[in-house]
Length: 277
Image (cartoon, rainbow, N blue to C red; front, side):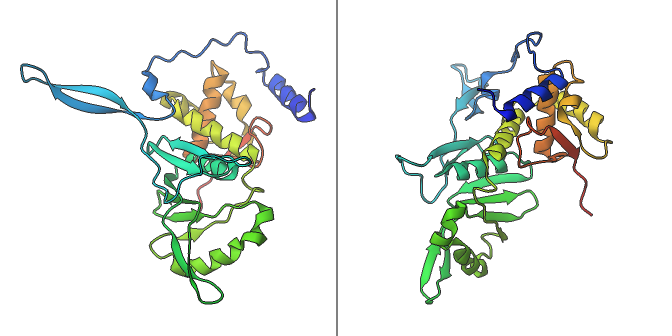
């Protein structure tokens, strides 16, 4: 059964001529599989043959383990648990809920973030009775600017029960050297649409084509105001290449979503990010 949202999405695709993909040729990858694999990387190893001559060989190695001070439970009946690998650090990041996973994807979808840590070391604080306690934040992100942000993540209906806001306030005086800022996130922010956009950007960056990105940048850099990502992407020989370039420029921070709380395919409008004065 077609929902209203799906009908509107189809109408948008028809408007931009991307409702029929028959003429699109399948993507052909001419690079090693490792360049597109979801986890792991190639490392160069030097060896010597029987004549003592040195040779270099590229070997595939898996990802590094999570650095979390505690790991997600192996089994659960009602919540998502697992790991996702950050391709920038080739390290697994553990999550104990879909909201944590969405936050990880959101952070992975920005070039401003250089490292994500799950379950960083505990922060010591004192409760209302003066008793010494410890709290482990869900995630910590290190930015290119040098700023470090920790993220407590809770559903709205758990805020009062967990007293997380009180815990945050009591840990703030003890964050020196550990974090510069605390950002509390809930399910109202970490939505499925945010996860969809973030995942799309992460996947696009993994297979980015620098020539396509530069061409897209040349097309949009002087545009003022919002514009259709679909319309600009359609100027490419292959729509998929243009749209992938749009997603990569979102990763780079050159572009920003006009409606970041909605899926890009439902609200396909972006704008060039203006430098803050």
